[in-house]
Length: 167
Image (cartoon, rainbow, N blue to C red):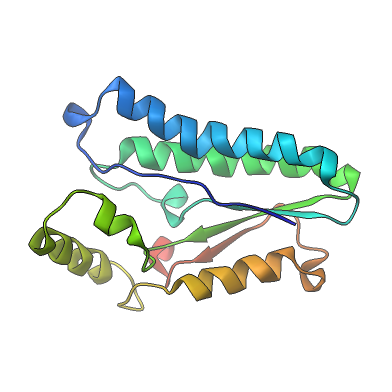
């Protein structure tokens, strides 16, 4: 089983974005996922499973996140193509699309505590379940997709977002 989970984000209006930011997000979120899978393939046998961590934003537009959402949509598209390529080899590939999840990412955005708290409240307001997800909830979805219990699940995207992408 391979879980492709590297990712980074930046949430800026288009005027504040630059080529360095664009290249950094594409390199981590898209290029990183692609070459991680490529390098792992020689070690994967029939019956193996790959799960890629994308994001619920693949089905949404979000202001001030155009580069981030574009990279996650690219990862989802990559997964669809690779699922068709790897299926005949007996390697399943699926995607998990987490929504807002309690992780350290908010602390790494360089925002003060008040701004971070206001942003969290705004995000929660857009989640039908009115809360952030727990990392364990995403992990259970990944483990299911990687398990033999999902042996006929291939090329699927599973939202773990409290219903956010349904809006």
